[in-house]
Every structure is written in structure tokens, then in C-alpha cells.
Length: 214
Image 1 (cartoon, helix red, strand yellow):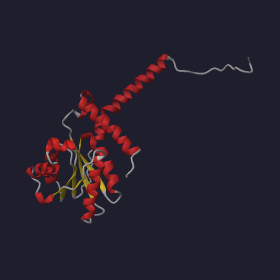
Image 2 (cartoon, rainbow, N blue to C red):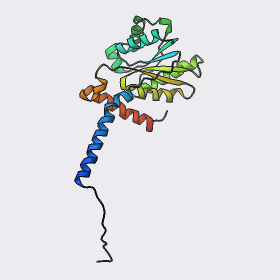
Image 3 (cartoon, rainbow, N blue to C red):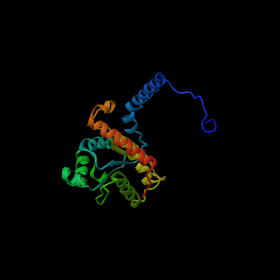
């Protein structure tokens, strides 16, 4: 048998070592997870003249966006909308919904633009960004800075997709409105928080690592 088998000694972890590693991994996961919503709900405005508002947000987010516009130095507020069945069933025509909330909140009507695309069933954030790009191009706006208003942990992915859609000529900042459905500091304690944060993290990783512009 010496020609077929050989005896070797090797080092391996004891049960105590495995338990220590498991405890360290659990502690690290908890530490990272506690700040996951904060990481995704980023706010980093660049101070451009155009404020872009994602068109799918709830009414209170529109009102906060209107306050940001009124209190800031923005020249235009652009609500990026795409048609979708669920919007029509809950809010009627979304464009009129958004414009009404913005004007009621103090934004002058002539400062509101509502570019939109035809109905889409997926990648609505990306298609909204494409609509904004076309609106900017139609007005000859180049090398501009914009601030994007998004909702909670959707903000980081939205900024990434807008950067991809607008290209290097535009600087994109982002402002995250607090998602009132859950406590951002304790997001793992509610089903809405778990679904939203975990879903947005997976979607952000996909957009960062695998997504390419059509």
C-alpha cells in the first residue's frame, strides 16, 4: 500500500476556534446591517440649478421636495414620470398628481417640468432618467449639475442609474427623503423595512456590478 497511500499531518480549527469565528462574523454582520439603510439612503447634493424628483414617490415626499426647491436656489423642478398600471389605479394620472402636489406646496407652475415616457413595466427609474436626459437635451442643457430627490434607501441606486443615463457631462447629486413606512435606524424590526432595505441592496449590487445601459 505505500505506493498508493501516504500519511500527512494537517492543522485544523478546534470547535472553540469555529465558535469564535462564528461570533466575529455575526458581530460584523450586525454592525454592517445596522448601517445598511443609512448607506443606501444617501444624501449628497451638488447644488445644481435643476432639481429632479422621481415620479413614483408618495405625496409627502413631493411636499418635502417642494420645500427643498423653495428654500434652495433651484431654477427648475423636473418630475420624472413613467406610466404604470398601479399608479393609474391608485392616483389617477400621475403627472397631474405630481404637479398638483408641487403647486399646492408653493412651487410656481412655470418652474415645473413633467417629461414622461410611455408605459413601462420594469426599470422605471432608468426610463425616468432617460426622460430627464431627453428633456435636458431638447433644451440644449449640457455640462450641468442636478440634484435628484428620491425616497429612503432607493436613493443610492437612483443616483447610480441617473449617472449612467446622463453620462459624464452631468454631475448628479442626491437627496433622500425619509421613508415613513419604517424606522431607518431599526429597519430590521418591520417587514416593510426588511423588504425595502434588502431588496434595494440587492438591486443596487446588480446595478453596480452587472447592469449596462441598453
